[in-house]
Length: 286
Length: 286
Image (tube, rainbow over all chains, first blue to last red; front, side, top):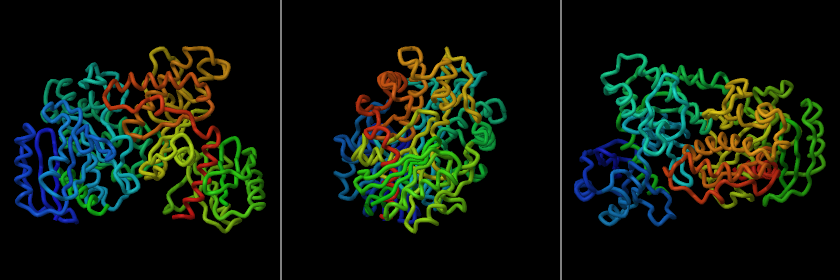
């Protein structure tokens, strides 16, 4: 049995499962302050015997094992969690290998193991919700280098009819600043879910997301792109994004069939927690 | 001994070298029509006994071994080379393993093996010349997925004082369309080399290149970025690019020291041919 934690900004999901990604037990706890939330997490795992634990965490986090603060959540705006050494805290309680990566890298791993990119050694997982983030599997391994990717903050060209300045405190109108849930809400002065039938909202959203997909395709050449998160529950976005991606690329690269290339998660909201289980498995097999 | 071919749009470089990347013999032939150029290439290798040959080629090329046209140059505008099965042609003459990848992926491999990114398991190599292309090493292997990357064609935001429409036949004002050598020449009506002392030329060039570097950093998180090609011989570009990258990222991610992170090739113009030697070596070791 493996343990898994999907550490999110609003809730922590904890699970126990097997090496095929089947989840046996699962619980959720609200993300409050570390002492409170981690007490729940620890008591969940004290009820189970696991041989490793995988953590897919909100970020930024330190993923390089040769850095002093490896295993910490670093400069998050959630101040009580800034510089929180989550791996060390778990290691102190449980004497097992701990895998650690970003929530989106975990989701990419989950989708490539048993979801919409099953059997592929290459995929990209992007979440469009309160923020935008993405993770990738390249040649069968999680993409990592100097640090983990921060794909949500790439630059995009502004839509000619979009006067909204953008929400990003660092870049104003980067992808996340213009296309994450809060940007939709402030631009149109309604929640995305109340705007479902407004064509112009989703055309503009697809305009930004398609630019991002184009950059990801040209730079990473993934074998499949899985789009999840709250905003992508507006399923009308998928055909709009596919169409604008084809228009932008304009025949430059030979494209896979976009219908089966840009897809929703095969695991629904379970991509992250399943991937965290795989992080645990990988840590044992290393 | 290994053999190496750097197949470029204007010339083919052929070399023989050892597994440490030392080149023993080298020759260059102009890229004319396949029959003519390949006759020279074949007669060069007939003079040497090599146990494998690596080819770093101009593209687009087919790099997936499970595709029928693996080993071909595909849709190049150099029409006599379109759909040319260069790997098959070499295999017919020489009964040795043949490694095959893009010229820029080969250069990334060369720089990470014995150049400016020596000892790192992650780097990006970008060439800015007649065109713009980039290759990357991720977790110690060449980046590859659905196909090879085509990083030169990413979208950039236009400089507010740049009226030039762009040269790219597919996207007009993508990165290559605005920042490759021909765009500089047509925008300023002089060759780049004659514009060396015009500050505004290089400020604008750095404006575009820095946007690209930002996207590459956020998406790939390389451990080092090596910038080569004819345009990058204007060394004044390096400090300008580094400065604009820092401005664009605006403190969002913890940065390495940019002085040693964005650098010229350690192998000068030999990155590609050295990498092609490594493609041969990798093919034997696989």
